[in-house]
Image 1: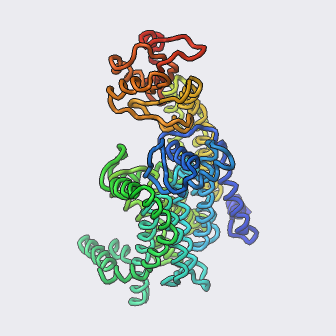
Image 2 (image 1 turned 45 degrees about the horizontal axis):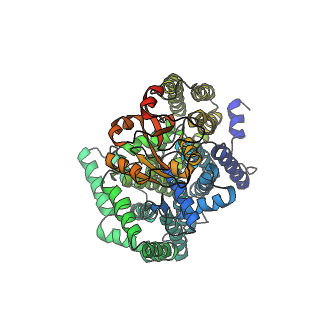
Amino acid sequence: MDASDSSTSYLDLQSPAASRTWHRLLLVCLGILVFGTNLGATRLWDVDEAIFSQTAVEMMQRRDLVTPYYNGQLFSHKPPLMYWCQIAAFHVFGQTEFAARLFSALFCIGTLLVTYELGCTLFNQRTGLWAGLALGGCINFIVIARAATPDAHLTFFCTLALLILVRGTRNPAVVCWQPMLPPQWLTYAAAYACMALATLVKGPVGIVIPMAVWGMFLLIEQDLVARRKLRGNLPVAFAEGIASPSRFQSCLQWATWFLRLFWPSNFLLTVWRMRPITAIVAVLVVAGPWYYLVGIRTNGAFLREFFLVQNLGRASQVMESHRGPFFYYLIAVCIGTFPWCTLIWPAMLYVTRSIRRDEPARAGYVLISCWACVWIGCLSVVATKLSSFIFPAYPAIALGFAALVDALLRKEANLPVVIWLRRAWRTIAFVGVTALVALPIVMRLLFDGENAPILLGLIPLIAAVVGWRYSESGQIPRAIGTLAVLGAVFGVTTLGFAVLPIDAHKNTHLFAASIQDNSPGTPHVATYKYSPPSLVFYSQIAFDRLRSRNDVARHFQDYPVGAFLLTTEKQVAELTDYLPGDLVVLRTERLFLKQDNVVLLCRRTPVGESRQTLASHSTQHPLR
């Protein structure tokens, strides 16, 4: 047996000895390693982590699981399911960073398992395992799994809903998924219950887009099945357009196919077959009670802010400067799926070809294509853009990678394997070289010459060399295995260890400690043009966000003792005529990632500290 055959046997994950139990255990161990290593070692990152975590703390302190509050005010950005999870973790582990992020990691581990089950059902056991490995090695998936944000929760419930629909339409007489449509009522009820839970994470997007994914799949699948029965084989619309001798005929066929799919009678019939009444009932039963209660308790204020501003407002206009071009998410996917993004173009080509050829697993390819395209397409037309918005599409993208890997391991003919892998390793090597060059410069500019984590550049370079050797020697399974190892090692090294020196430069907790140590009674904290949300979490003191210089002057007039102001040195220079002359500079620290200093001012002389006026501060604390 040559090297190629032995490596194939070594990674033949469809062998009887490799049971599903061991596969699931492997994915759980991967998640614990990559998502859990030093999970609570870094302090909360502004803005989202700090706001969401503090909201959970305030709900817990108020003993109110219905109405979210942040900084003492109604917080209408998100529904409460994520806060409930954080509260549960806070009760067990205390108000720590680890507890705030714990359920994100757990839900991402759950998503790995659900994606594995989807891969096993849609395709085969090996595809399912590689889908889990690919998903757990995508850099942005690791970022979200280690962040106290709602994206992991949303993705889990949306993915689970699709798994229920897939399992509910499975034909046990065939190996690959060939759906038996329409699903039973109980299948739809369970899937819509999961989507209703998703609406308790992020609102309407939790049911609207998953239903659109499944609806688009039904439209295309029903059309393909009907045409197969009509002609005896499958003249797929995609293939017709490409094979036409005339570009005009190609465009005409695409337009005809599109109109046929969305013809009102066909579209409405498909919507009705999706049991929309069941969906409405599921949302009313699962999520309705909380929406009703929060509406009653806030006199509708939460609902107005949440639906009209946080949903419709973000869709129609740019909010919080989160803008981007129409193709923003295409770039986000290419960056967020590193290192697997090096195979994204081959994966797209393979999935498209498999749909055209009417392979046995065609329905699975159609589903993951609809899944990725609907999420990315819908959110591309939304005005406000964030890379995390398309996070629920990552399992579909990972399934596409896994389908390609399965074809490569099966040595499917007419696939330029070596060429694709060569390009992948060149790209990874380029990333490694770029990191080696750029990281020292960035660290010198932003972190006062902090030693650059050059290991982040060496890891891709080493993987590129090893993977290249495997590819050129024909050991394709080991080459792809190198890619999987790279994703896990690079992710845990970057987010578990390399960020620690950077985290040491965050200083909000230091200002929080200074406020607590120097408060003669109840502190009155205000910020001016610099309001880090983590200040509330680490001080557990609500602060006033001052909008004008007159507000600053009024703040010190209203609170002559125990009044604090957090701002930047540049703003202090503009506030000279509005500040009392006897202010004390309690603390000065470098503004994180900025060329400025943060200053904490107080109108009393702290015990054990000498009185320092603003005039002396300007000479003793130059910009660092």
